[in-house]
Image (cartoon, rainbow, N blue to C red; front, side, top):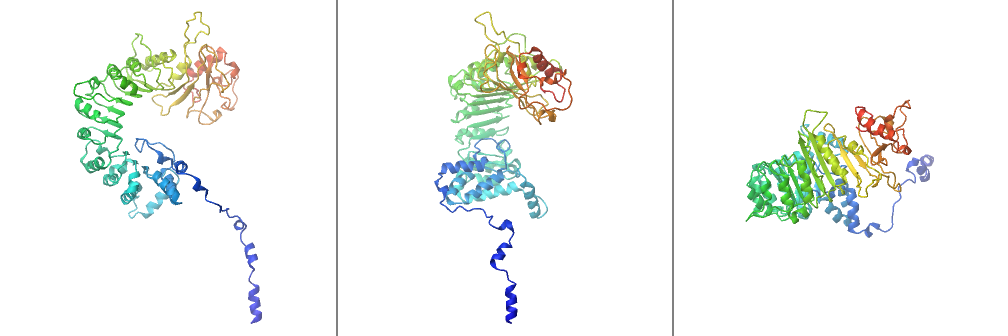
Length: 571
């Protein structure tokens, strides 16, 4: 027995030997653990809030845009999950993270990351009939149970954004959710809510009775009675209101708008009965409110004279910052200079029109504004002559306004003409030294960013132009070479450095502009090229800026004769 006992004991390896038998990756490779004092206690709530905002950027969205128009890249569902985990770490973090978690709630239909395939397969396996589980509806129901079970969380909800199919099919769940969110400012609603559909009657009653801080509302054809009910005191904090195809007396509309003291933005869409009388003062009626933003679309009864009368009031002129005019036949391009003349604080002007005839030969005063910083000038030609489109005369009028320095504060310009940046660079040269001391230089006096595209293009092509000085000389190079970047996403080979193309536009010393390749964007070799071939001017150096032949080859040859080429610079 003793012999056998010794044999059994000998088979056992000592503890030290057992430690050596472990894999090397498990020995002494554990992550270090901090055992000192908790340094997070030194962070106040403001710093924690800033940290959690980077964890979930979507939670900071306070815009009044719908779920489809909301920005912020990334996966909202994953970011919300991470922020919810932060709330469970410690008691100090819970109050800050929970307040941010339920401030702006956005439910997405899918995960915008690689996890969507995994979760979709899991939901498919859990479903009874093999059908996919409606994840957005389940999330809305979970949110409804949460806010109804904890009224403190319900008071924190200010923005609720839902996908289209969820808000159309879950009207009862939305009504039960908003009924316990008294501080709600914006919520995505079904289309029937805006045109008086009886299926949204309960939702409308809950929203009117419980949510008094709504900031944005729309009214479509059929919702005239709900619009008129605003005079009874509902939603007095409305900031934005959109009216589409409604039929209403102008006097009632004036009373409705006058009953909203915080109104700052109004959109009129396809109101055939609306005309200049809406702005006229009338006894017993409140004046048309002073707005920050006014948007007009397919309002043929309004004219430039009517808008000029509205802006003749100092209160309205000092308040209006954004004016959008889209497809309004009564407001012509020559009338824009009248509007800009009285709109002394106007910063953004959007004008979109479809024209079938060119401007008359009579000279018009240029568009003048010292406050305008952004302009959308989108003229679409409807004529059948592709060689001489009628919209060319309108863009020539815009070019004359820019070259006469009548828009000194303009920084961004959007046009629907792909050749417009080239037209600016090919402007007539100015005389470097005028004989008369009263000579006024012709050209830009401020940097300008031009975004252009054609009718068959989906993305804007960006061009940034930095001008020369008053006598056509180049500016100082202490801050780097004056650069204009032309970018395109199609039609370029690998010799151009990838998918995007960039070139430089600099003053040529005579009031015009030249394009040269950027130092870090020179095209790489793509085979043998003849030295006599201009190669779109990219083989030239910066020292040849003053060469007239180089200017002609780069601006006229590459810009006009080679437009059909896939490697074309100006396309």
